[in-house]
Length: 331
Image (cartoon, rainbow, N blue to C red; front, side, top):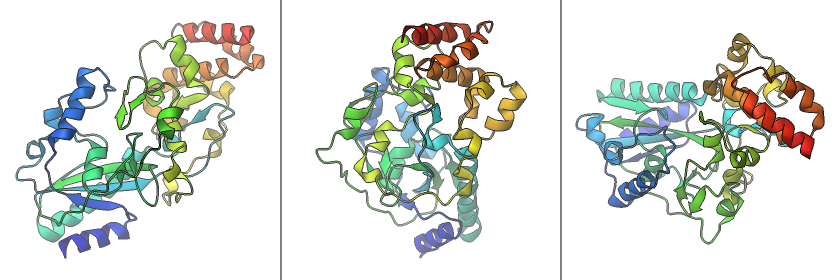
């Protein structure tokens, strides 16, 4: 009854992907985290201590249940023949939407059952995908994404921890079989083996990276300005999936037809105006301009050389401008 009531309430606020699990994580998961840490394959954005990531009682005393929710974000297909953003970064920053939904469900549980709750919207120490797998939200794909029945892997994940006991859902076994399309398609071979990602190689990480990018990284970025969808786009389970009903995730015309001239001439205030509410905005104007300069260098379009030359006086961007100009002149 408790579970049904929570599911019904979640549905009333637009959440139709919700699951429940216990708070126990097995050694297989723990060892997988340890392997990635010891190999230096973590992105640096996550909690590095794997024991912290499974210690649920440190988050909420007497925790009994973890609730996972998934919000779909696929909206339109972007034109990849020009500089583009990944599907997950086309609309409003998902953290804002996810937090709102998680907060509403948490308040419902507290007000209805007098239970304690704490929630995380891709912000805490919990491993969102492992939690989602435990909760039966979807199965764990070889591309390390959670693949749901209705929306494929194009979902944002968040979770609630509560001291309320709620009937558990059953995990879904992987349905990848012998398929290796995602591993074969990854531009940098960041998927080093099934179900294993070297985050340092992943282009999604590379587009966000603060450190100086290598020639190899710049080449592999292609026309990407933020994020990468390759391992998801080739997945058979992502074909003909439902699109999102969340209007905030739909793009405006300016960010599906991104003007290089406008990006490279933007003031800080203009960048905040256009990108401040998006999930790509956190990398800041300079890194975004860096990525645009790299994309122009990969465009094979010599007409961009004058625009690139206009940024040669910028100390941070000069290195990338010179690289891109040399590449265009040599092509």
